[in-house]
Image 1 (cartoon, rainbow, N blue to C red):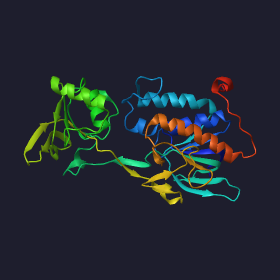
Image 2 (cartoon, rainbow, N blue to C red; image 1 turned 180 degrees about the horizontal axis):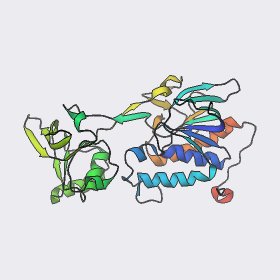
Image 3 (spheres, one colour; image 1 turned 45 degrees about the horizontal axis):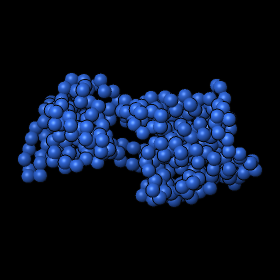
Image 4 (cartoon, rainbow, N blue to C red; image 1 turned 180 degrees about the vertical axis):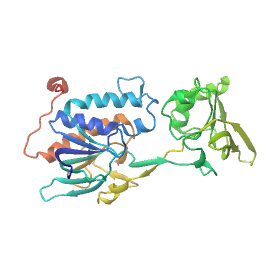
Length: 338
């Protein structure tokens, strides 16, 4: 039996921006079907850093990735979105009447009046360091994300990388792990200055150790249990860092997957959109969040929220061109109860 649906808006991607797009569409009385390749909503917030604090969400001095997704799910719930998880949109075809037919890897078929692509970085995976025997330790001693801080309590942790993830987790794990050593190829870190300052102070206090300038050279251990991480400086000197766990934070590899085959205008693996409507090069298809680009685009969740609001309004204009849409504040409109 074919699983077929009709909806106002098909949203590709169930990360924070996609979830907020459900709310914005709902406020305009448009229903949504949401498709995501992961088996849970939340995108990177859920898959990569559910317990990592986020500090730049308005009205939340700090909120974890997991809690943010829970709040967004609750906010979208009154509009009864339909989620299609563990499946990828493999086909997207525009019909003669201007609607779109989507088909997923599980055979789900959706006809939508408009499409919002909120696919983040697309299909993503970690950039692995080129170390012999790395795969033997993955999942037991080598991890590319932290789901629960408590998993690393009393562990000797080596963190590799110089970006926000490396710095943030060095700060977060400092009071949980037995030891934390941060390996980076240069003294300068590409992270929020305030966070870097805090990490450097922990290094001065002896709470953690900054191992710079060094780079990863090898792994030592038995079976799947790590015992040491070998690092090398630029003079070729080797050093063994005692370790139970290695956390290499070298970013994600991005793969747009089928999105790259839909004939949409791309720039360096990102969708080109109009910055006031989020319209792609194909009328009726809009993009929001990390997958898009325009002049001075900032890859921040809070910017994605704004983009979702603009995309929803533009999608309404496309889906219902004969309906005049009056701007109303949520305080005047209210939100329907479930």
